[in-house]
Length: 262
Image (cartoon, rainbow, N blue to C red; front, top):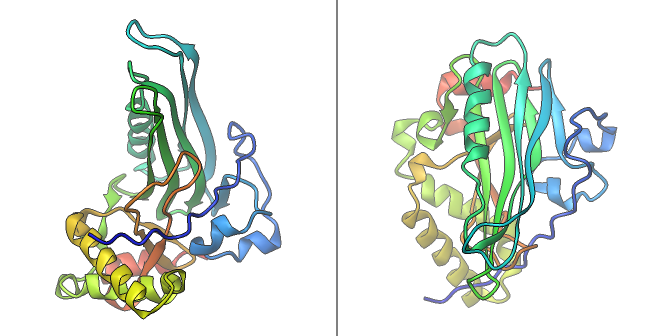
């Protein structure tokens, strides 16, 4: 299979993630989610708070040595805690803590990280963008990474996936829409018409191999994003290529919540 290796997005180092209190600059307020990591002047994590309190919590273990491990493991895992009157926040906070606790050191891991890059917190919807990264000591120095897009409903505490927000009649054609949006945004990274066709075919194959209906999403700026993330190049680079789900195919109840965002 011909694989087109796209230019990786360099992730800027975050500041002190233990402190969630921050003031947003006017420039950062207007950034669209798909451009967020390109704006190196914005503080990490980038937090938009609309009436809720957001705190970044951490699970840390330094120099943990397991019996069959060659090197000590460093664990640095972050998760989000929300405070507010909404009934679903307790369930959401538990889900975030439980997710963080799934990241553990093992005999072959020397570094386990989860970094929060962006949070959008409104009275109706909460969205989190994070990166998971695990470095394997016994795998010739390889690493395994993944970008997470998670959106919660503050009333029920449940997570949203694609099938929850897209009208049933529009699900069959969603792959075509995502491929078209991907190529419009990132197609120029492939040089030449043949390379662009191969890139589009690869994106289509990746979507087909995933469970599209259960894909996580990020809601902010009255837009909904999913990520095309099929390969991680190295321990500092990764594939973050967000594509937008058009508002015209969103279910009415979710669209109303989305439109409540500033």
